[in-house]
Amino acid sequence: EKSNSIASRVDTMSKFVGDFEEDLLRELFIGGYRSLISMNSYLSDSEGFVSDFDIIYQEILVNGTANGTEMDLMTQEGVGADIKSWLGRINEKATELNILVGVEVDHVHVVQISPWEVALVFNATINISDTKGLASWNFQKEYIRNISIQGLEDPLYTVNSDGRVTNLINITPSTDFVNDTTEDSSVLLSHMTNSYYIESADAPSYLMRFAGNLSPSPFGIESLVDVNFLLAQGIEDTGNSIVDYLYFSNLSTSLYCNITGLPDWARVDGDHLDDYEIVKLNYTTC
Image (cartoon, rainbow, N blue to C red; front, side, top):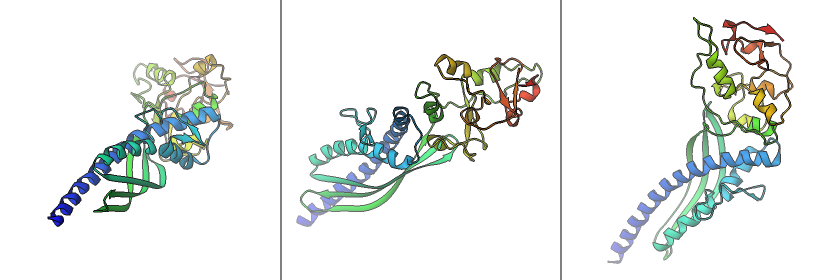
């Protein structure tokens, strides 16, 4: 009878472990996404790029703080998205089943896996035990959740505007910027005034932008800066190409302006004339 009781308990706990891991994956998706939003808030508050992204991101995800400062989005009462808050809720339910859950975070890493997606890699040591000592699970495991960056704020805009301007990463609805027959550039104008994004191996990736690293990446993305909007927020015009990573840099490039159908502040460097089909339009050197 005792052996049957133990077997039943082991079966119950085995099911709990499976449910726990499913819930952990959900938490990593929700908490991971909110941690990216919170990272951008941290940049805005600290007014600078970060060289230790993974360290700060791990603190936000696990504790809901960045350098000890609480991040409001992570620590909402009763629904906190940080691991500590989530684990507290898990143990409230587990206690009803006479189960204790412990999670020791070994390492958190975020890696760019495509222009529009990052992977959250979460390594932890998990201990799930029966309060009476009948059974326990203790294991190390790596969990991975892919997170889309669409709809997130671009840190390049956040830092370079001292937090006054945010630009959401939205993929352009069309890369047919100029009509071949009519030379209509309205699609390009819409792309520019909405600061939509395209893939570009000459541009930095989303994660690189947190460090202010403007080097090219196979997962690079870029937008065109709406200079007029920045001016309205009190941000001085840099005079550079409106391709974002060039606009916010000190790189000097050949510039072309007076582009058919675009505002007079639109300036594009020679390397991007073909990318945005400006070669089909009339333009002059600036």
